[in-house]
Image (cartoon, rainbow, N blue to C red):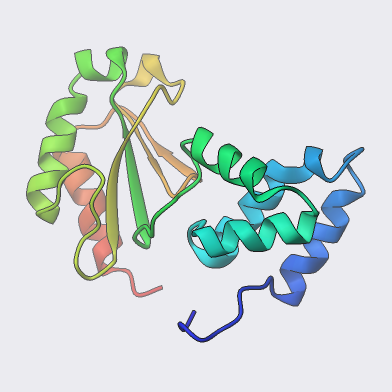
Length: 166
């Protein structure tokens, strides 16, 4: 999205939003799924995107911003094409999550919460991802889950993602 472009949903996203509203008793009740649409559309929920959602939904900007800041799955700053979220809760830590994080940090030359200069990878920690029996694990782009990780398997994953051109 260029700096001079207006922030608004594509026609497809707007149609999805309108359909979404039919499943909720109030606009306010549809805020979380609407924020997911916005994050998918814009990559992250900048203050301008939050303002757009507030106007679209006829909600106070303070309410939208409060919801965005409360939930960790919403990005308040840009993230890379591949967002690696490593579970750092107790079970994963006991089974090697710190080594997984360290291997990723070393391979990508970034710290937790940072994005690589080319914009391909962001590394974050995540609270429990509900896979304690197959720890350590990570979530990729909120969609894919990788369990029973080793340093070798996570580095192989990074190499595979880096090689993709999609």
